[in-house]
Length: 141
Image (cartoon, rainbow, N blue to C red; front, side):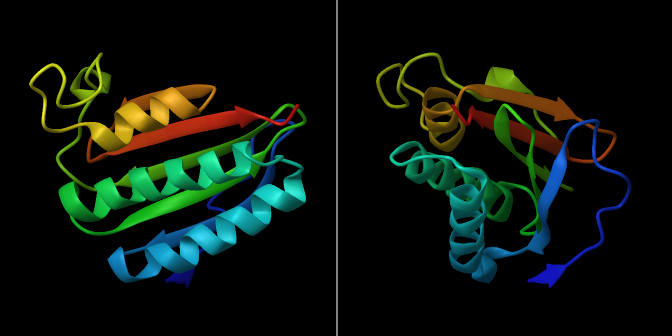
């Protein structure tokens, strides 16, 4: 896992906490780093554990479905903790997320994104010219 520069200024009112390029072998360490940043940001348990589960699900998707490597950016605003994960895979949109729990409606894919949508306060997916960015956030209060 390598530390990367922020690649530009954070958004207005946003504090950059972490920016890492990761692959499959880096995910356990990434979970620990995100949990520490979430704790320091004031995200209480059990929401903090849910946030780490969401990070694990989205990062795992990058490794499994989008070329094996991605970039995670963790930022804090006064209201929320946000994670953005960008990959260089084929790209996708939110319509890959099943409406019902995967398996109940015949879908066998989309479990990680479905779970992330369920346990976070906000989830967006932006398809870029190459790859996609999954952003999710939890309110700090």
